[in-house]
Image (cartoon, rainbow, N blue to C red; front, side, top):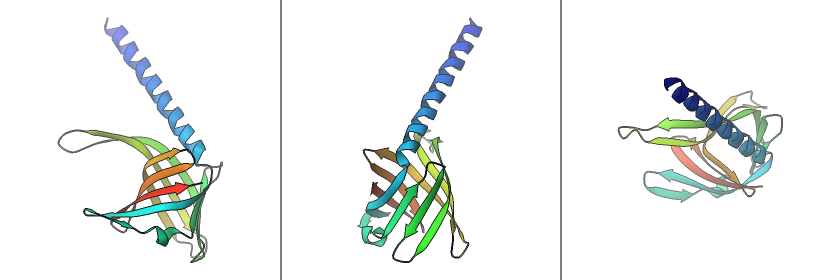
Length: 148
């Protein structure tokens, strides 16, 4: 009986991981293309400040080979590098709550200054040629909606 329970648990774990991996792959495939910033909101304390104009001349492009480019046409800054999308579980504080979401991590190189920019896009969601994510920048959280 113990062997049957173990085998069932192992099979369930395998199928859940396969489903998760397929979900990550589908979301990653939807990223491919050039994206423009539609709405950027800065969340600080309990206020929400619209700072979309700061990003209006920027685009992010995801390529099929696992690289991305972030370009600011106003300042002529250009970063490129590899990215990785993965599923994560974060077990919270005292209540042991579990948060599950997609995260994109990238290490980008500024081609002019050779400086490295590491970014993490939290709570990534891609649907109907729209993308939402949170970006932690300079101690604040930016809630971003982009459109293809």
